Length: 72
Image (cartoon, rainbow, N blue to C red; front, side, top):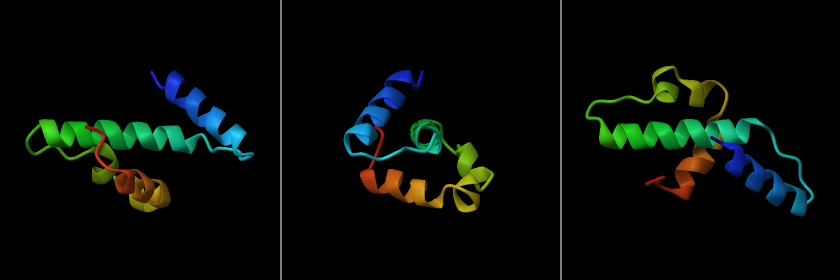
């Protein structure tokens, strides 16, 4: 499911002369799916929010995803 996203991220990182953590695509997936469900299913709390994934490990990535805006 994330193959196209991963390939694009890796391509852009390589073009910029950077390496990219595998965590980036995982964060994009967690954020996007969580936000779509939160907005679609009344009362839904995304997994990453419920289990405080963003606060424990991926705070920087959450800030980047939320700054970019809505996945919808």
